[in-house]
Length: 224
Ligand SMILES: Cc1cc2nc3c(=O)[nH]c(=O)nc-3n(C[C@H](O)[C@H](O)[C@H](O)COP(=O)(O)O)c2cc1C
Image (cartoon, rainbow, N blue to C red; front, side, top):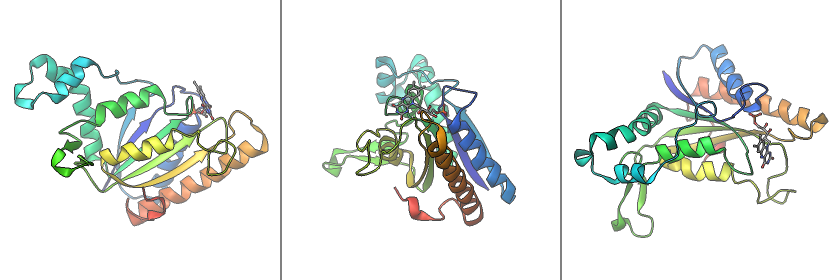
């Protein structure tokens, strides 16, 4: 049984490309008949609260010293982290908003990357004191953007702060391999958008079948 955590981040319910992509991945997985247990966390429609000074203080208070109020401040974070912990595959379907991730997804990231829960911090380790607690997870990153050409040497090289950010931070969720499929040109429409959509759909179908049939760690072509 594979456990998959599905995180949708689009603020749009209708006409959302990224929701279409996560639906497509799961529909293609279902066709294989391979058992999967799916937990859905829709941060686009139900944004987690932004962390606060009190939240940070609670997270840094040793568990046995936390007040009832501090425990309840961390309750959502505990639930989100529990969902991450169970997952073999974390599927994040997210738009690019203002060249980065939607605020709702960043709020989720801030709630799940937590000291003592998803990473440890020890200065004995020298200049890299942080270490993830979880490991062996696979990240599937499904993205959509209105513009295009974010690759090396392309028109908007250097402007993609979405995928690099999620690749970097996913290490602290225990991710060791990442597969990324993106749709571009949404704002332009036309044949380039249609071609980008068609190619993304093809890649998602292949990826779903590959991971379902050969396990979540199959095909390390997208290794983080
Ligand atoms: C608030 C907002 C900000 C956006 N910012 C960008 C951007 O910086 N760069 C870009 O290429 N597209 C941008 N877009 C376009 C979206 O990435 C694109 O519409 C995408 O398809 C949205 O995902 P969805 O279809 O799943 O809702 C933005 C869209 C919105 C609504």
